[in-house]
Length: 519
Image (cartoon, rainbow, N blue to C red; front, side):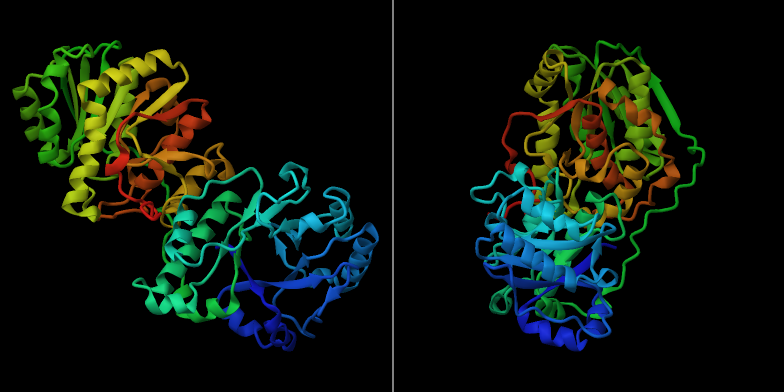
């Protein structure tokens, strides 16, 4: 779990000094305090609170430099801080003692002033709570270690959740902040303020944990103590069981493999995981003219389907007279990801194909009938239309660094719904060469349908994902190993130096994942 520390307004300082807040803070998972202190133009701390006599939680200072400081004023400030600095009670984040600065533009020098602050401790972590970028200062000239989130838009609360889900990481340390809904807005909100606040907290925590490679003190700043008390209860903080299944390497259960015809490396490999027979029929009925070569692109067909449907699917394929087919009967486990990684991709690579299209019979039932039809149709038709296949062939042949091509609107930030997928994703990244901050700066192909260059996906063949690692099918909408692998696949392609691009087209059918439809 991330380390939550809470900002205390000056009105709460006296209660903190008396030690009245510590027990309640612990019950609400607060692990430290951030105390905002004003600094005047002479470097004096205004209304500086003395710490409690027997503090339970550590604290950090947020120094608000509202007036320009001279070098001498900064030395005065540091002298007073040195007296107040008590190392065993200073809040540590990522293993380092913390201080937060606001008003960097009022420091005497963007370089030398911060060097003076670092004399407080040789491992000092300096964060800034200024808005970025700061007017009049170049960000790369600032010697801060990281940034604390600035105040968000309180008027449209779900816009803040959208930003949390769509957040891309930068190169610097970033500390997510979480704000409660304004009480006046709570009264007129059609959504549950408690649930929205909890989601934001969980999403920010997952983001910080991944950005800091699973550190147990990955920071999240609770921006309002009173609001946190109002919207949280100790019972709501009980951890859900979200740990991934144990990864025991076992032999992959036998599959029923059938096929006919000769594959050709010059043909495009079409992979389909056919779980839903009716959707598979719709896809297959589009294929005979393509396999005959009338669109200039011949296809070799690679199909997986649950074991109990393999006879039905084989008959359909033979009736439609497909020339080259490899058919795999598989266990209903791991959605489309397990068949893709364990059967279809290895078979396509072994046959020497250069390019492939990956489809599956998608029914996103959480979006209702209309959403299902539009979303699935957009993905399949983008990749399987005559124009789409010709565009795929042309782009891969002419862009030598292109590793993956996906339907329009499907490249989404990795952070979307991260709080539901963090356990599996942490585990996957810990067994890869990918660090969390870089991962959070990337996007992934939502919907898991795309065209690919086999060479770009070859590293996935060496990783080994035993079938028993995948959860039993239970109609899950998110949070499974398959959902985490949907993200990892894009990361591995990018890490290997390949580009992922969207096809042209109208992205209007893509659902608004992560509050994406909020303006």
